[in-house]
Length: 234
Image (cartoon, rainbow, N blue to C red; front, side):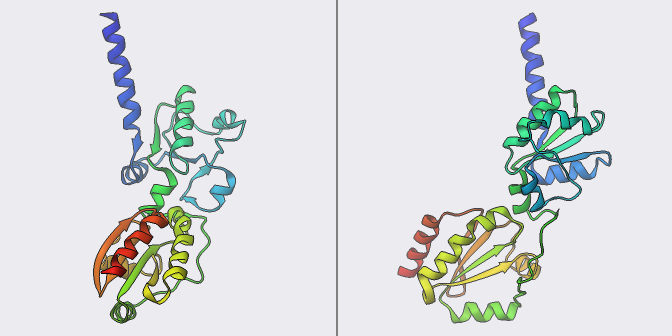
C-alpha cells in the first residue's frame, strides 16, 4: 500500500512538472495573466544582448555562481524561464524547484521557438536595410519569373539567420533560373497576411505564379536543392 501511494505521489509530481512546460502561446498568455511573474533568460550575456523577451532579466545558467544568483528572485512569486531551445532552462527550472521555487514555468522550445512564432522581443538592432515590397512589385516578379522562392524572415529570428547563408548560396547556384525574394517580416506585414504566414522562417516556392511547396522552419541545403531541381526539371 505504501509503495502504491509513493508511486501515485511520484506520478502527480511528474505530471505537475510536465504541465509547467508551456508552448509559446500558452507561455505568453500565462505571463500576461501573472503581473507578479518574474521573467528570466538563462542564456549567456552575449545571447541576451542580441535580443530577448520583453522585460526579461538575465541570469546566466553557465555562470558558476548561477545557484547563488537565484537569490535575486522572490521564491513566493512565479518564475517564467527560458533559454535558446529549452535545455538550459530545463536544468535551471529543476534547480529552482530544488531551492524552493514552487511555480516555475518553462518556455517550450525556448527563444528559437518564440521568435519563429513572431512573438515580441526587445534588444534587437533594427534592420535599416529592410525593404517593403508592395503587392504590385511582388506580382510583377512572380509574373516575369518561372520559379520564385519567397523567404519570409526577420533579423531577430535565430533559425532565419542560421539559414540565410543557405539561401544566399541558392541564389549563386541557380542564378537566373531561380528568383529569390527575401521578405522581411517586420517591413511586410501585408505580405505575411496575404500568404497566411504566421511562423518564420517560412519558405514558399512559386512556379509559374502558383504555390508549389510551403516549408516552415529551418531547412537544409540538401532539401532545398532537391526541391528546386525537381521543379526545374518539370
